[in-house]
Image (cartoon, rainbow, N blue to C red; front, side, top):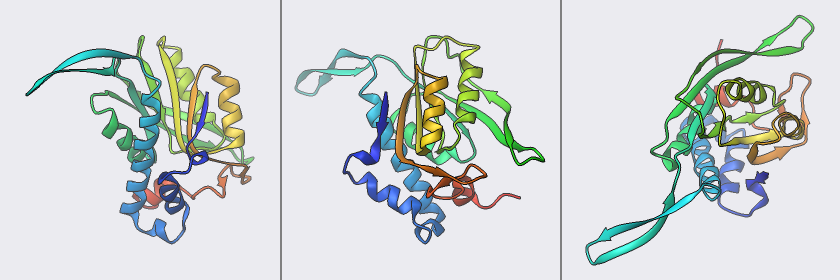
Length: 214
């Protein structure tokens, strides 16, 4: 399944527009908050696909029957750019445990690169629904590598992958290598640079959220 948020006219298009706008990006707090808002919106959409049970709630005047989620998804993000986006999901799934991954591109002399995973900190994922949260889905290599690492250790009940902006190539790579995954994307861009940055994209999400790294 592939869900694209900006295919629907909603206030989220304003958040996406501000995330992309080079001048608005200079407000680092607003940039982080807009990542958080997109996370909240995608979390809400994902929540519609979860399993639900009916429960009875005692009100001051009687009993109300309400369908509530029967499962608590595990939220997993790739540091550091994913942190504000991840916060949006935590705002919605406030009982969810979280997993964290450190990974980076290791560039070769030829200009090509590999994804190097340095650390994974995760709760037990056996039989769980996992939401992997990564701000930018460029080549899709890091997402695929992280998911395969986790799938090699645990049998998941369901897998969701969320990104603010993805490239067409990245979406195709993920769908080819993780056909069981549900993809939830804010917007999809057609192009990438020779260094695999999404065009028009929004730039380096980690630097814009937390400051330039050295």
